[in-house]
Length: 330
Ligand code: UT7
Image 1: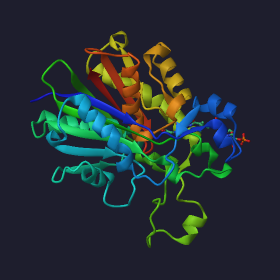
Image 2: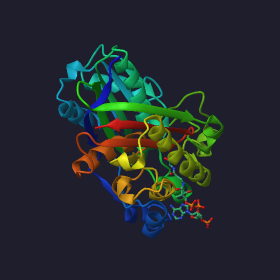
Image 3: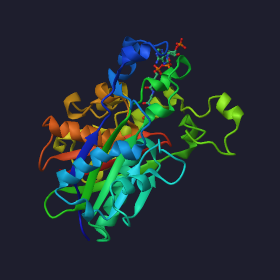
Image 4: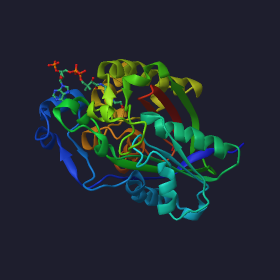
């Protein structure tokens, strides 16, 4: 049995910064409301039509460089996104073509905010069995293309942003390791945070009535999401600690999916952790769904929040509902 590790990381966000003040001009909201309820100050939106594969490309190149491999060494491409450019094929096909890696297998996964950790778990299994040695794992979202940026959609529109994060998961030959991953889901909540009708795609499955009723925009039962998130996040962090007999004190940093600053604060309190041990960059990018964990890892490493040999816990909760964690030695 082999061991896997995160060998390289990369992140990319569009240059266009959209502040809360800019949103005030599009809908009835306020900078104060958004900061108080979410902790978000600004997010990035693409300015012209741009698919997820295109947005992810710079992050992939950075991760490949960071891992010190050649792109030709990649054995599998996994992409997690809720905003694919087309109904089919998945974003990973378009990304493979842009990377000019013809014949490398591609796999899209659809587990929303937990996508990056589910992807880590899938990559980990392929590496452990010796089947593959280097896997490109991407979390990417172009949320702005599918948001209702009017007062009608304000509860969701102010939360989300565009961005991409990438990791190279490789066979480990040193002390760095993905020690364990823990995956959960509860489909009875599937409609508490969902997009009923695929975006950017016309088919017999989409009626004019559906579009007139705005069922192509995300719907969220915000209270239900919040209530479950503050329970499931701590649970899944504890699952990772207990599985490895790690004490909270052993952990250098918890890197949660950047859902909402109030959720991060609530889980910090429930876990009785100091706030500086739970990383947040949501004020800069908003909620970038599948991209948020790798983007947070890139920023946290740049800020010197963790380094070689440190123990990290990654954790996510979101639509599905799905939730997941990973215990990592950097
Ligand atoms: O990855 C998972 C992603 N989802 C989440 O993390 C969301 C979890 N949920 C939450 O964080 C919160 O439920 C929200 C931040 C979405 C909303 O906060 P809330 O305290 O639950 O507010 P609410 O939905 O109960 O709305 C309170 C008021 C309402 O007005 P009335 O009915 O009291 O007059 C809303 O219409 O705030 C209003 N409101 C807004 N006002 C200004 C809702 N959205 C906005 C907005 N700007 N953007």
